[in-house]
Length: 145
Image (cartoon, rainbow, N blue to C red; front, side, top):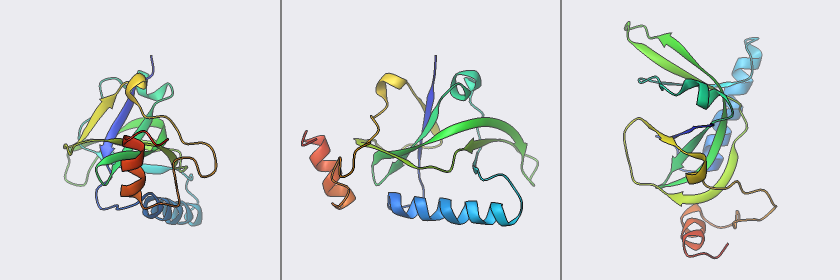
């Protein structure tokens, strides 16, 4: 069974800002001759590694709602310069927009079952991409899409 993760996207105020950061990171990695992946390091290592690596995604909470996801390639054990063991979440650089889903603040990451994950937005203009994120999220919450 596939399992996802959900995490606050700290310091990011929009999907576009996340996409810009991802593009810059891929350019940096390309110039350094490294694989074009995104790496996010977190303190705790998920115990459900096989389920996550079998098709899971990291769902990002931006401005109080899940707004997008990144496909997880692998989870790797890493050790910081301080000697503390951590988890490196290796992801595909593509940011996939999802139907906004309200989410209260929390620390770290949480598991997200596939049936609880918001659906992907696939069509052009689906979900009102031209609208401000907070207005679009409110309209989605009210069932406008």
